[in-house]
Amino acid sequence: MYKALILASAIVFTILGGCSVHTTMQKLKSDSRFDDMNSVFWAKEHDSKSTLWNEAIAYCKKYSEKPNCGTVMQVYIVSNGSTDVPAYGSSGNSLTSPDFK
Image (cartoon, helix red, strand yellow):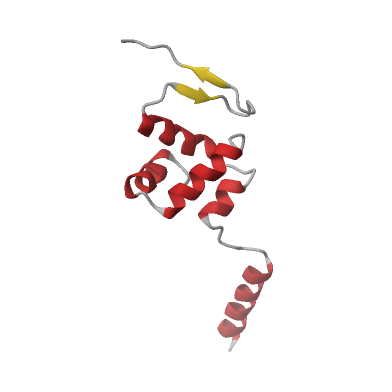
């Protein structure tokens, strides 16, 4: 009986404590950086041409200053062979990498 009460209390405190799972798009829109939103994750989404990838690109083109959009834009740029890299928080300005050919 005592163990059941402890387990029930733990479940209630977890639920009330705001322990929630974020969707990928919620993480992308967040002002907090998430380690699982890395280039490996986004490269897989790009390669599979997923709906999530298309949503992420559309969002990050508008809000490139968001901390989790940097990796999305890097994968997008590399996959399209571009040398123009949007500067973080630049409001549309871009840096151009040199052509080493």
